Amino acid sequence: MRLVGIVGGVVLSVAVVAVVLVALVIADPSAEEVVQAFRDEGLEAGEARQIDRDADRSFVPKTYEEQVSFSIPSAGEPAGRVFTFESGEDLEQVREHYEGFGDLFPSYVYVEGNVLVQIPGSVPEKQAERYGEVLQDA
Image (tube, rainbow, N blue to C red; front, side, top):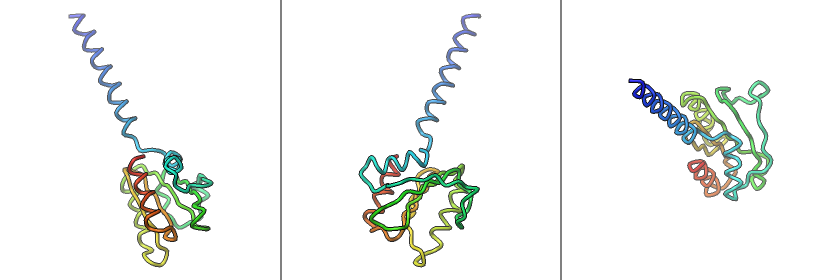
């Protein structure tokens, strides 16, 4: 009887560790990790800057967990942005914000899990698509 209890405890412990490891493996990357992935793949991702939600004066909905902007030197002044979110509902508010501008302020928007990447429309489409491809692999 005692052996059954010990074996049961060991099996339960192994199961808990397995669940934690799986959660870590499938967790969304941080915004900084995504920017680093861009760099690692040879994409333009110059100076990166963490944007403090409380100090953010933009009209972007403040539903994000974190936001990092990074320069794309060939595109000039506009920067790319990486956002992470707690939920898909929070992400959708920011996606709708950027996609709602249409031709007025064009953007490329890429989503993977609870991560959104926004690339300014001044970046050539083929180059912008590479950011989306790297996000999928991040």
